[in-house]
Length: 328
Image (tube, rainbow, N blue to C red; front, side, top):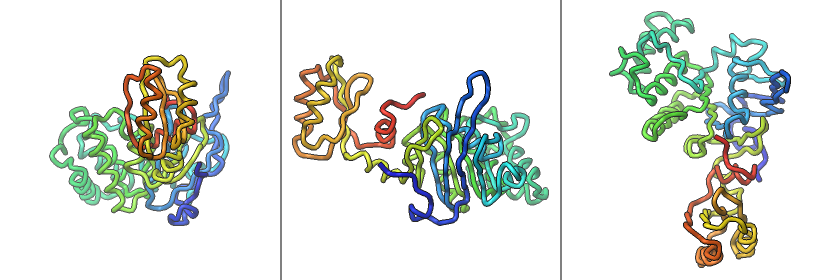
């Protein structure tokens, strides 16, 4: 399995614009909860970086600390060289944030949400109007400039949040679960908007539990769970690390003896791994002629209902690392 890499080792620009070292966050109470447990993270200028994992893994807490909304128990976070705890106001000038939930001002129009953000960050009235018009065009919102946020679809509202977040020309944009609640068409449009930020040299750090999203967008990803980074690499390298290029999901009528079937499958040439699923087994294998019929023959004795074939995904990597499905 790949080990965590920094920008230097992965061949990216050596200077980290996001530099997190030894980050810990413990919420005190009757039963203390460790949300982040010693994270080291280094993101290069211009990189699109993903933090993946189930809900409650520590992703949002990490982003909250990096964007000055929470204070760490230990460790340091520097954004563009600025310590976010020692100099939060200075750090915020280099940061754009799209939180997990809609924070648009419902009493302001689409255009006003952007323009007032520009004014807040010190732009003149003329500059703010120019930047607003530019962003309305860039995010295809110009025809909704006079609408109010509650009149927008989820996808349009998310595009507006991104437009507002980059209005002051931040160097790093943090996106926390950007696809949550979006339909497939809106999600694809949002992905296109995020990809387009490369032309503005904006570094993007996003959190998600949608594996497809990370695979589509990110240069590098880190899988995080229980407040720790389990593995970090490019999506392609992580998928290659599971040791197979075919995935067979077997849905069985009888699951009581599935460990016996799992052992039979492991003995087949080309099979590199077998994992239990809710209603059967997941088989990871190298491509080999005649293997699928052998898998089906073995599974038929256990009431094979269906078999689905796919390539390994980032979700496959996650399950191999943790031995369980993603928590929702």
